[in-house]
Amino acid sequence: MVRRDADSIPIAVVGGSAAGLFTAWLLRRGGRRVRVYERAERLEPACRTLIVTARMREILGAAGESCVVNAIRRFEVWSDGRSAQFSLHQPDLIIERATLIESLAERARAAGAEIRFGRRFLRLSAGGSPPGLEFDRQEDGERETAAASVVVGADGALSEVARSVGWPRPETVPLLQALVRLPADYPIDTVRVWFVPEDTPYFYWLIPEGNGRGALGLIGEAGERTRRSLEKFLDRRGFEPLEFQGARIPVYRGWVPVHRRVGATDVYLVGDAASQVKVTTVGGIVTGLRGARAVAQAILDSDGAGELRSLRRELNLHLWVRRTLHQFTQTDYCRLLDLLNPAARRSLETHGRDDAARVLLRVCQSQPRLLWMGLRALLTNRSFPSAPASE
Ligand SMILES: Cc1cc2nc3c(=O)[nH]c(=O)nc-3n(C[C@H](O)[C@H](O)[C@H](O)COP(=O)(O)OP(=O)(O)OC[C@H]3O[C@@H](n4cnc5c(N)ncnc54)[C@H](O)[C@@H]3O)c2cc1C
Image (tube, rainbow, N blue to C red):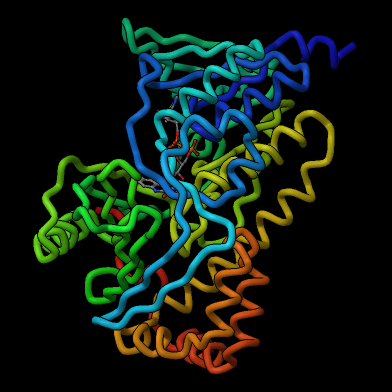
């Protein structure tokens, strides 16, 4: 009886982007009433060129197809004039984020989820039963309240749902990329990566969209410095920026438990709101979708624990690698490229990036000196992240 009452009140998903819309669709497919509350006044997601692993297709099925604009079969990695190349047995995908979100919104709506735009979530008031969500309605600035049986916070790195329920704020780093025209001879199936620790402890990348353009960007630690570094890098290589895309991304520093209870209400976090981002590359699409799937399973009373455990293991492994790489100097990166013997390279090519544990194990088996190099870096004292991320 209590359950039927709860079921007549919709589940509230706050945030209508990749993680939120995917959660909404899964919940609707599982027979639950779902209402998505999105701050933006209409479905006009910002364009971003992103690279994801092939796992996105496996998770999303047909809804993941329309956003694919290119396939990547080769990586070229550079450090101070040295380079190493790898072919990928399973290509990575270049996707357009806006198309992905539009397609997820269409699927969620078609399944019967309601999407309310122009609703900025303010707080959860625990007083009522069930507790109320309070929104700022963008069209007239009025307050709006709504009841919800379950709340899912999918409202990104600066999640108000997380703040309102008492989850600690994650650190964030700026991610900035420029769309550029590619030289005519640029191989369209190849991503270039440059390690320049003087500019960033992460890296620069150039990912081709397949239409003569590409996204050249970097992850930084402080906003203004990141922009200056990107502009200098573009200038040195003769690229003219056509447009910039950027936002702050949460830094995964350890597993964020995704569930809390407020009175009788279950509150969950998914995607960037739960820092479900691989901290090696700051990729959050596939991991956020996996987090969404696990939370939807938990709400639908099937077992989401296995998926969450495996996601946690993967994110922790990336954290370990990041802690190591964060200590690397330019000389270390050059040495790393020199140490990649054909067997280590084959391991990188064969085992997709989705199975990070196996890739690491095989690469270290092929070239044990890499393990020593990693351990030595881990034992140095530089903290991670090494600069304040609050600019
Ligand atoms: C320039 C750039 C390049 C990137 N490149 C890659 C890449 O190559 N590969 C990859 O995997 N990842 C990449 N990422 C990261 C990836 O885009 C994010 O991890 C992912 O989009 C997060 O999705 P999300 O649905 O969790 O959150 P978001 O996409 O941040 O969505 C949050 C949603 O919540 C809404 N919202 C926020 N606050 C409120 C509120 N108070 N009330 C209601 N609604 C609210 C927002 O409007 C938004 O629609 C990149 C990020 C950037 C910025």
